[in-house]
Image (cartoon, rainbow, N blue to C red; front, side):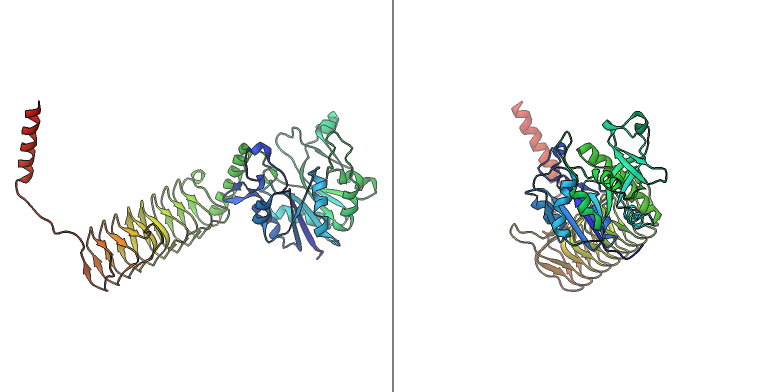
Length: 450
């Protein structure tokens, strides 16, 4: 491909009425990322010179979500060509290649976009390149009609197609690439003489061909160009993307015991020889090092796990958790905004929040860092090699020194020196025979009332 400049225009002004939502359609999430975010990630892989996102009036949420990329407002929303025209002010003087994409089509891949750019820059010098697909059920999709040389002759809407044209299996997927030097004129000549009175971008092909310009087609897998107009379609796209993410994880060297039950975010990163059990959910911002085992039914979000750690089952790692190498995080343990240093063990029924757990420390079952006093959060620091007995409450701000031991059932409200033993609980008292006398007395009371 030549070094021509590249621009990408993402159409994101749709209201998404069928979504039945107060949120703009393109902000609905797939694999933890807004749909328009997936499209932006795909175009950024091509390192374009310009990116413009076209939004509707009052869509400040979308503008904020796509920042720092600039937005253009399609004020009247009179069709796809009208939407592209809204971007012209931000593309003034641009004569490179322009790809037009849709913010509600989140599965398109960078490789497909590169193929469109390559076709646009091919020997035939097409003014327009249209992305096509061959779905199992062509249904009411517009058909792409090719000429004898394999170029695109026209796009025919299903309702306008003849029986012969409806038999064509090559369908319009919607995405288009233009020669920027010719795009402004072609789109400017599109009219609205149709039943809806709208300006259709697909008419650019007919105008280009009528002017003696070539047009071309690039084919994509139908799964890449599934659009979202309803909650049901959003669920279908989620399913397709999860399948893709699971395959990528396994191809990268991770073992998924039951792939269909594991859910990834778009930015999940797994190292080699990671083993993931059934029912694990990765929220946004998770990075997992090599040889980590994540046992069944864990939930992780915005955490980093270093090599060799063991997590779960039934563990919850929340934002800001940093799990060091060879750490053990066991069943029903929650860690939030805390650093757990290499070799430490937190094996059972424990909450560690706003804390540091030193290397090779051992945290007993039922331990809680009491980090919130109803007004502010405070830090707990547990030193290397410390042992915290079961059912301990560490009332922050507090520190436990290296090698210290805290007796089970303690409530720790003051700092503990290194290598000290701290026990903070009432001395055990024993009263022989008391239980027998208590039961006998209660039985007599009950008999008198009968």
